Image (cartoon, rainbow, N blue to C red; front, side, top):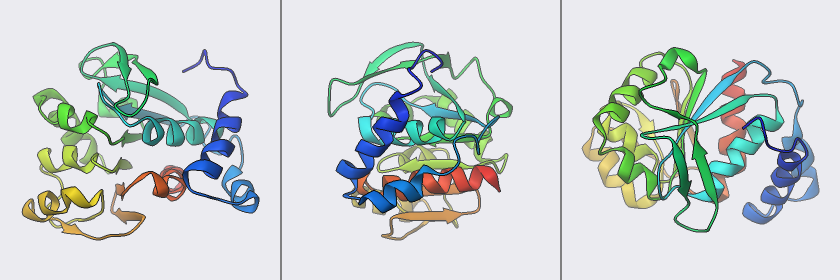
Length: 208
């Protein structure tokens, strides 16, 4: 993500806050935080074809704006298109080229991407291992489906889009309908309206 213009993400963050969550100017200021407070933190975004654009770009922009280094990882390198727009994102490193030790946090956006990711055994092994490190593991919307397949939700409190509530409970988890939920190192949220709280919680967990 180093090639991106340094002014893009502060502007994108403000616009996304106003349009996605209906926030006022004061909340935009409250979300700004310290630009370098996540300096040195490395965050992986796990995506493939059919990712949700806002659920990827919003937290990515928020974390980069606060100083984090973001890497897009996936099954294969290349450009992938969001299911809900023409936005594309480039996977820079494959799941075979990274280890949980390479990152301080993992983010799994929603959309159709989680349904594709959960079918790959190497992805599931990576996610299971990452959760086992006790480092922040965040998933939004359909993202928790990957956690279900990885077998890490039993006994945990999670949220997500309402349509996956049965999957979570059948896997032994406890589903709660709330904007952001933290259980140990697992962070979950429901829908794009929850992105400000979701992004802020990832940052807070990285600083703790």
